[in-house]
Amino acid sequence: MKLNRILPVIIALLLSANLGLAQASGSAASGGSKAASKTAKSSTSKSQKVDINTATKDQLDALPGIGEAYAQKIIDGRPYNAKNDLVRRKIVPQSTYDGIKDQIIAHRAAGSAAAKNGSSKSQ
Image (tube, rainbow, N blue to C red; front, side):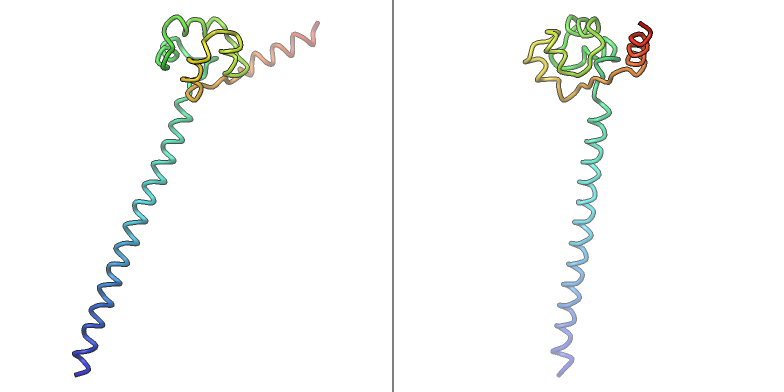
């Protein structure tokens, strides 16, 4: 008689434990893949930024709104201290800059800064 009452309780506990484990492992796997994809997106977006001081004409031309003419103007206007120099120096219009500002970066060349400092000291 007791076995008839205990057996359904044991089966119910086993089923609920099994479902709980399956749910926990599923959410851990999907949570991990979301974190991995978020990390991958952030690292690729950082690595995909185009340095306007060193990029080739083809790399600049690949940016949205930048054609061959703007790419050549960017190259001719180098070096840039900041990416918004493109607008300040009237290399590209504000609307074009707004479309590419998240995809570009302006690293200053260490050699040119040292050369400027060295030449001003010798004068």
